[in-house]
Amino acid sequence: QVQLVESGGGLVQTGGSLRLSCAASGRAFSAYTMAWFRQAPGKERDFVAAVAWSSPDTQYADSIKGRFTISRDNAKNTVSLQMSSLKAEDTAVYFCAAGLMSLRDSMNPKSYYYWGQGTQVTVSS
Image (cartoon, rainbow, N blue to C red):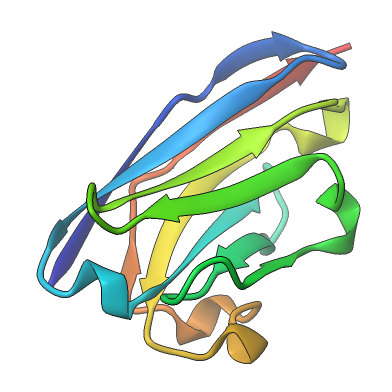
């Protein structure tokens, strides 16, 4: 069992930066592929980024490549998402997720076993 708690969301202006963090509790955190998804009102939950258990292997959605960076610290059981050059379309609830799939299969939300409660990111134009 893994529990995930996100933090770091908030209100930021277009072009600004935010850093999201996800703290994991439970066993064998380092064995999981960790990811961030986001969901805007009325839309489906979309993949943002994932990091393999054996970081630094990562995968990103095309919409955020070059602007967001995912990282993990297995010693601290945390995964982070550094977001920069934020746009209004980045506004969403951001979720942390953990699963045992390979990075190749990390874009499908149905592959993940555990989810956090989400943190709101609002980018004002």
